[in-house]
Amino acid sequence: EVQLVESGGGLVQAGGSLRLSCAASGFTFDDYAIGWFRQAPGEEREGVSCISTSAGTIHYADSVKGRFASSIDNAKNTVYLQMNSLKPEDTAVYYCAALWGAHACPDYGMDSWGKGTLVTVSS
Image (cartoon, rainbow, N blue to C red):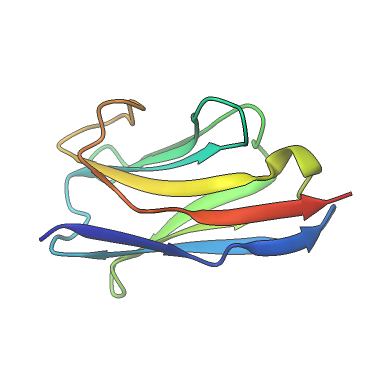
């Protein structure tokens, strides 16, 4: 069974950092696109980053470029999202999701989703 489990969320002051983890089971990241998404209260879900293991690319939303960095530890079968210089507008539930055989992370086309982890940034 394919499963994704996020962790690492919490409360942090503006300007602080958090590292989110997404542990995968039931599959490895070969030939997958793995995305981080977030949904703030009352807002639509938005893509934050997308790693394509087959294409060897990483893309970020403009709103997080230069502050967030996504990486993969294949030995731990875990994807990370390092978030620095956090802002109150980064407050959201963060989800990881995976899509086999893809080079992109379409919001409504991902195969598997985690349940999310809440990040709250106080001003």
